[in-house]
Image (tube, rainbow, N blue to C red):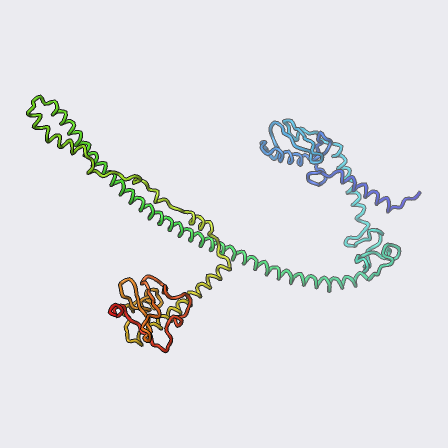
Length: 457
């Protein structure tokens, strides 16, 4: 029975491959390195790998020269997890597996001889067919997109496939498809590099913005700390002031009561001495003024008494509920809130313009009636609250400005406006309404009468 040579070579390769799998260390995943030690569970390890896993399982044992020294230890087999207990010699106390070492030597010799025999059979740089080992790969299967040999096309798996000359496909793929693909990759790499640069700049920008915002938050909190310290000092000063005032008052009362007690004690001593006087004439002579002094000493009506609860200081109890809630609600401004703040600023600007119109209108009415406004302060800004209050209406007194806009036809006031010099809005004027709605019709020319003229009338 003739066995094909190709079949023998294939069977030999399979045997060598299965043997090589049995000679792989489960730690380094390479072929065993001598010396090879055998564990009590009959699994094999390189001694170096066994020492490494032993050191990893016993990190607190002393080492010398890369090996663990001491009074033994333990580790688990990486293949079956069996616990291996070592004596004082450590991994050097494990037995060597000489059989495995000999098999490794034989395997290496056989592998070297096989490779040395196979090298002369094929020329360097020539790719041979895996199925037909003596045939060079000289055509390209377009259907399967793999290079193959002529025998595969005639007798093998590519009989029904479309093939092309190897050099033709080589030129197409190298000069056209692969070149275009490489060019596209280069362009894509340039774009990716540009994106990476942008991302690096974005990282720097984020870091800088983060540092700036953290600095701003820290400054804001430092300002709050300063305000809290200032307010604490003010409140503490108030408490200390009243505390000292009450202490001075109580100590004054204590001093007066002490003086009264000393006087009473002296009277008691004098009274005792007088009662011991044997001479009746002398006793009677001293008894009358002494009785008068005793009567005065018994009376404490001239001494003030401390009021009930005078020492109480509970009215200085501070309520921090709202402040604590406000502190807990401190947060970052959202986009909607920022837009609302901008709208509020715009509304403030519109209100300033309306105030300027009020001043101009009232001044024009004053000039038309020939009355000069005595409260107008030219040094104040036109848009300041005090200037608006003083320019709008004349003041009858030092603290308020009062005027009546009367209708000459009827002689009765149609609108009365009272402005305090410290107020910023007209309390009698409806908010957000034009001034023309509060003035008389143009048919009747209004008069602005000063406070002095009103008093005279």
